[in-house]
Length: 141
Image (cartoon, rainbow, N blue to C red):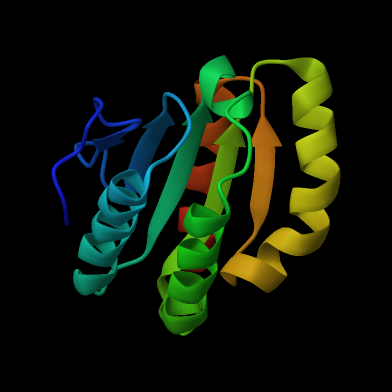
């Protein structure tokens, strides 16, 4: 991993285990993707069920698509999807803006499980997201 030229655009909170919380603060660099993937790999290495909450800031949502980041993420998902399917009970995206959340929800709920191997839903608040994730974890065993 290289030295970042800007502050990290992803904050990782592993202190709410088994819910892993990511706060996306702006457009991702390749280093940010490594940080994000590394946290999920640490969760997978535990060999226990877990869930993911992604909290998207307006700056992240407005950041645009970075093809190198997208390609790296898709390659990582191909490699790790079997383990994600087995251990990740669900992924919740927290998007406060109603219109953006509705647009994301249409795609996420149709494609999320195909891409990640676990259910993906969107919520307006972290409380609602965490309640759903904890219910997914309870149902997973």
